[in-house]
Length: 553
Ligand code: ADP
Ligand code: MG
Image (tube, helix red, strand yellow):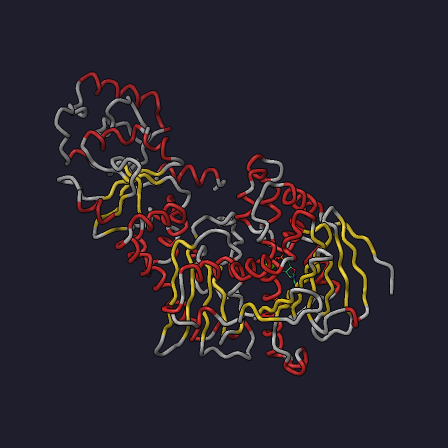
């Protein structure tokens, strides 16, 4: 066979490897989950491709993952009979970091103190490269389904890897074998008890059965049955089962903050298992970040690009398994099928109604979710008019009067001041600055609560005539905010009586400012500050004006 050829990793991979291996990250166990989930993904990819090309899977060998331990040689092997990799797949998949956003993320954290601390790395998921946390050499032998050529990839994780063709006799008949030469301090992973308990706790619910051989010459025994967890009745499942599934399925390291598991029956039949994560993914605001709900048809993975949920629910992880979509048509056709449209609608409504239920029954738990994902959910207020009412009732706000508490609009509207007929809000870039704004003085003096809107998306949804229970939203910077109708709280003097002195000043200011302002007025709204800028009643909100100016429009 040809001599191995040495190729460099993309520069950032070397940095990533170093960071991982040298971080104090204690939970090395995750390498198992990463490699087993790759093996399961490979089986699912083949299951899908074989739908249109049966020759890829002659003889119907059932999918399986085999883990073989060799404690004496300090070696561990994970083998699957999935899709396998061609030479090009190998260098593309294992020579670059595959996950989108990973590179940008690495550039941001590499060398920073946080990275050393490393929960960070744990949260973000490290994929195939996690193998180098426990191994000083990793060998991959693979043969793509339908190909008569096999390849060996090898690396010590320090900066380069080699690829060479190998004899098919040395490779799995189809699929991939990953062999880890364990480091001394990780040799226990070749130990039957450690391996079995780690795999079961982390990957016990992957949809492909897992077999374990305790020694190279031992008999394999099944340690996980590969049954689809989402098809099992809820009553049989424990919270730990869901957590394990969530972690191995979504590659997450946190707990689910909310789990939805149900079966829709009637016109369209489908099962849903979906999770709201506890923590924010690092790419939540990356414009390329797609939704994360995978589509299955009768247990066969079809695509994760079906956009089942709207963008403002892109943090939800999980899957929908349909019983009545056609299996043997293109992904594009599925996209257009009426059954999928019904699923989209049904699942979206259900996610929102489950959130609403949680908000009602367990407000503490709900507020954690709002705290983490509120800025994303608010995008729905202008993207999804049809569900605006539902989203407004999910929305929570910090207000001038709420301190650090979140307030709902229902609560706000139930406590309007006499004469107050609008929901007042102030848009800005952060809470502290908003709280210090002179625009709020007149509202405070009247005991009127003002919603504080510090998020980027806020400038977008509050415009456009939005209402809640018949009350319009009104910016405090807009002249319309007519405070004259509302009584001052006792002990506050009325500042808006225009004395001769103030009248004189106004005339002077108008002369000096000329065309650069449209009007100068005495105002109800200031208490301690002498002057402030306001937008005209009918014009753009000040904050939006600034935003557009900074976007160069
Ligand atoms: P991710 O799984 O998030 O894509 P990984 O780093 O875990 O990232 O894997 C990178 C890529 O390597 C995968 O997307 C896949 O293309 C390929 N790969 C890894 N393991 C296998 C395997 N066992 N069989 C086939 N392809 C694999
Ligand atoms: Mg992976």
